[in-house]
Length: 202
Image (cartoon, rainbow, N blue to C red; front, side, top):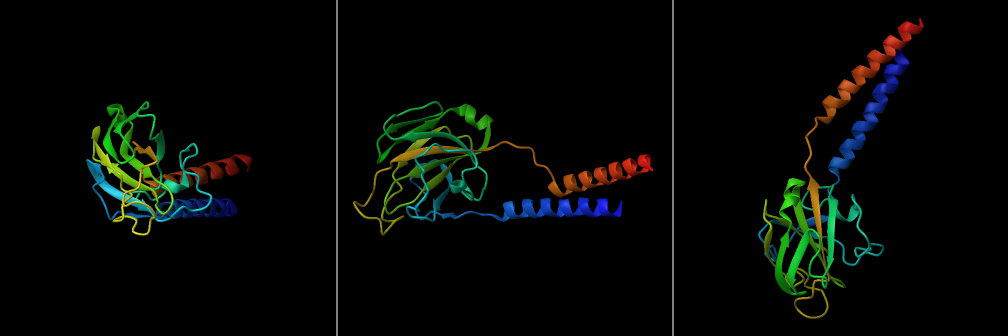
């Protein structure tokens, strides 16, 4: 019985370490120097890399993409939709304009599924990803290219570079669970089960 309890406690310690490391991981995003390229918004983040080798942002996105860890202080984002500037509209996200400026809109039903929604802009050489957190329950607004010399003073080419891609991300509505309490209850249940099982065998 003593060995069983030790194994249970060791397993819980590993689980707690896993939860702690995930919660402490804050990615490589930081606050923007230019926070008004999309309206209305409630926050702006810029990714710290500049054309990092191996990051193929144009490829099909997947939930849990490590590139978005830490965006707006949140580690887990779900990919909703991608829009290469040229199509003009898609299922949940529409834009009317060009690679420099225009208007945007999203399907209002997304707010029933997500607590937070972010619109991520991508350009190319000398710049990085820029993300804007949409203001709560907003469904339309305007955008301009954030790829300016204010944000990226060392980027080559003209003062304001074109947007090449926009993608929509969200954080799912979830019920908050007290993880330490859950683990404690699981531990007690396993201990009781193990004791009862041992007693029945004896």
